[in-house]
Image 1 (tube, rainbow, N blue to C red):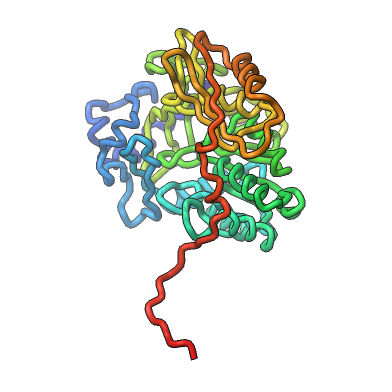
Image 2 (image 1 turned 180 degrees about the horizontal axis):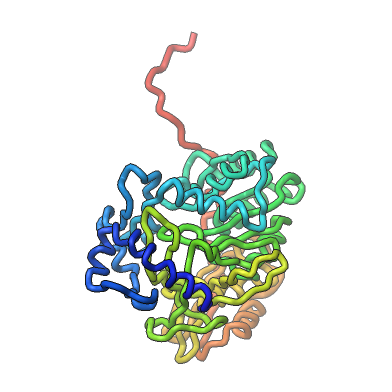
Length: 409
């Protein structure tokens, strides 16, 4: 970890503790800690603790200062709570606006993140407000802005920026393909894409950039923390050092990792007001790297490898979602859907293609076996049922009910 960042955090520790102890959660958690001299003296905050906390336990300011309430996706079934002040939202928006995409007042941003309990859509909205840009709040996971509707909006309104999870880019590209629509020709005004909310390995990024013909800028963060890092124009994901401290530990949280070594991200929010967090064990796998970037920033680079829970272990060897993405997205043909299933004998990889294969199944399996180095066997199943692509062309939108019907004269 950066010695400079630790020293700066320790210098600001009394102020940080004064703010964070207004949270009922930390009043209880830190009750036996009187005068910590270093951030290292503070115990870790785990996801399980956040899930067990009540919705108001993480609130560290008076309710009148709160602008938004948000929850994590709750993949375990129990989401964690986050409160955001106006300043928290604006801080996240300014960070995103300063990413490599360089938002400006001439931009029209189609936001495909869900406008729901998750936070990314609202931070991009704040970035647009900050730069006086316009937005198309299409959202996702809804029956109003269907996939065909989104493509229609982007083409007819001449959107300049798309913002959403990487998977939405893949599904929109598949929709365009089914409509015989060439994305490069149909979207001449689109100049860049913002993504967040999913792992984006280098090979996946390169694949999507080729599909869309536009540069992609990644963001890294969470609903619990806000936006932690932003990608510059040179493809480096820089830590927002003014607002966050990241420590990297081994899986058991016993040994701190050195710069460049992969481990679990432990995050301290330095400026969050609504729900500040101390040494939050995110369960994300990351590594930190010193930079002297061509963009002019020397802030640490964050490399994200996915969630710890998605890793598969084979003796001393561990494969992360990043490892699988790098292999899948380097295939000659990329499947529209895929998944890896752990088996007693090794793994089975399921893939769905909606077009004629340029290679035989045997050639694909040979490539996968060569690239995925595990002691067990690898099976490949070509499965047309992984994802129902017919829903992409479904234009049945949700409409308001009709309360009064008149006789047609």
